[in-house]
Image 1 (cartoon, rainbow, N blue to C red):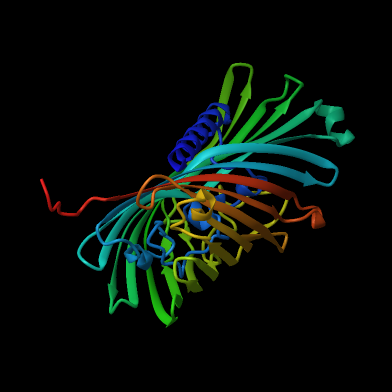
Image 2 (cartoon, one colour; image 1 turned 90 degrees about the vertical axis):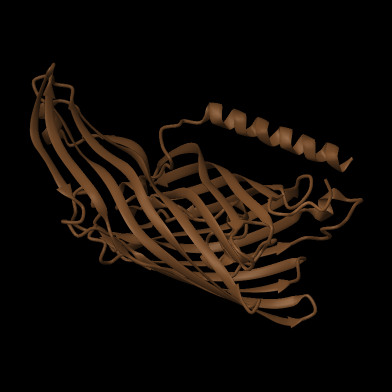
Length: 437
C-alpha cells in the first residue's frame, strides 16, 4: 500500500512540474519592481528543506538532507552515502501602490547540489544556485499638460532581466564527534540588463533608449563551524556560525543611450567600464544559529544573519543606482529566522503520514538598500513537509512561503506573495563493499 502511495506522489509531482514548466513566462528569474536597484533581489538560500523551515540551517545537522547554508554541516551524513538535491520554485505576487494593483508569477529551477564522503568524518559538496535576480517591466504616461501640449503623448517603459548565479565547492570535517568545521569557494557569474525607453506619438520627435548591460563576476570564500553537545537521552543542542567574505566585483558595465527616428538610429553614448575600477563590491555576511534537537524526532532552530553592503559602491554607479524617482542607498541587511520540524514516527509501518517530516517557520528580512531613507523589509511564514520515497532517505519536499515585502506608506510598493517550492532529495549508498557475490 505504501509503495502505491509513493508512486502516486511521484506521478502527481511530475505532472505539476510539467504543467508549470509549459505555463511559465520564462522571461524573468524573479519579478519585482525593487529588483531595479543594485544587483537585484538577493535570493533566499537553501534547499526546499531549509526554505520550509523559515530559511534556517546554520545550526542544522540532519543526515537525511543536504544543508549547504553552513559548509560544516556537510559532515552530517551516513558515512557511505551519496546525496543530491534538486529544486523548483513557483512564485505568485500581488503588487499595490496607492490605487494601482497588478500581479505576476514566475517558475524556475533554484538549485542543484551533490554531496559525498571523502574519508571517514570528512565530506565534500558541489552545487549551483541563483544568487540574485533582476526582473521588472513597467510603464507610465506623461500627464503634464505643459509638456504633452507641445510634444504629444509620451510613454516611458522600463524593463530588466537577468540573474547572478553562485557555483560553490566546499568540504568539511568533524573532530571528536562534536566539532565540525568547513570551508567553501564561491564563484559569482551572470548578466543583468536594465533598459529604459521613451516613445513619442509625434513622429517628429526621436524615441530615446538608454540602459546598462552588466556582466558580473566574483570569487569569494565562506567558512563555517558547528558544535553539538549532548544534553541527555535523545536531546542535544547545536551552535553554528558562518562567515562569508566580502569581495571585489569583477566584470564590466556597458552603458548606452541612442535615439531612433523612423529607421535611423544615432548613438548618443556608449561606454564600457570595468566594475573593479568603479569600486564595486559584494557585501560580507556573518551568521549565527542555535538548534535544540530531540533526537531524530523533532528540532527547533533560530538564525541571525547580517551583511554589510555600505561599501558596495552601488549608490551613485550607473546601472546599479537608478536616477530619478526614489533615492537609492546601500545599507546593512539583516535577517531573523526561526523554524521547527517534527516527525511523528519515522519507522511506522502502518501509517505513511506518520513517517513524513512536517515543518513550520517564520522570518523577518531587511534588504541591503534603502529607498528615500526607508528600509525595505519582508516578513513571512513557511510551511512544508517531506514525503519519504522508497528506501534510504529519498524524498520529495513540498513547501510554501507566504509573506509581504514593504507597505503602502511613503509611496512604497507593497508586495504580497505566495511561493511554492518542490525539492527532490536523492540518497543512496555508493561506497559499501558487498559481502557476497
